[in-house]
Image (cartoon, rainbow, N blue to C red; front, side):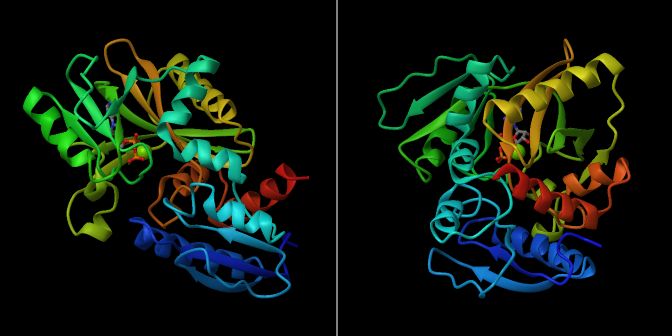
Length: 307
Ligand SMILES: Nc1ncnc2c1ncn2[C@@H]1O[C@H](COP(=O)(O)OP(=O)(O)O)[C@@H](O)[C@H]1O
Ligand SMILES: [Mg+2]
């Protein structure tokens, strides 16, 4: 019998951010799985802090990607209300959602990560890295606002766009190589997935063709890599997860530099997509963990992490 059989569970989906529609798809998949596990599932569309939860729930399953759901804000509210919930706690989520704070953890723990600069947008800063660079807002997801800049003109345009998101932006050394992602479930590191966008980089349309109506990516899982490279990538992903204080589950994005096959960790996603085509379920599938088992593990690991 499953851990949640006969229990009432709230499935939180939506959120006010740019990843709302992805969260909706994730929520549909997870709700179906939780029902198959025997739970009574109440779906709650969360658009901001004033949401109502049903009485007597065993746990709130948080499937809200991005702003509010993944950044610690929702977690802090659930903690204040004394409700058990899935995923990392508020403090950890605040760090992992912020690519600058995450990078500090990586650097302190010796996790390999691209060189970077926090770039002020008031016109007083100068680029200290060599082109090409990547400009990205520190607190967004789904490749929103990410620009790969190969020329000074492209960099200027990216800086102009970055003003939409805040008063400073993250600029990173561009890593030429393969795009990988590594799922982690408690202390289990899942097989590496290689992502191959058919055209361009892993931007919004190549991530969610079903949402944007364009773009495409191909995936290889487990990624075909020499054994020692596989170990190095998985070790870097696990070290990244631990360096930020993660305990439950996440998907760690890694670039593998082509010229020396060295891994560079980009970021940690603590509420990764769980749509039918998403990567974490794919990685689980490769080691015989079904979608339903993944959902149950997330609940079990979350309860364990906070006792
Ligand atoms: N330093 C980098 N070098 C090469 N490509 C990068 C770099 N940073 C980001 N990218 C590309 O942009 C995508 C999105 O960046 P990422 O840091 O994962 O942010 P998010 O997924 O939260 O938008 C990556 O999947 C990768 O394709
Ligand atoms: Mg990413």
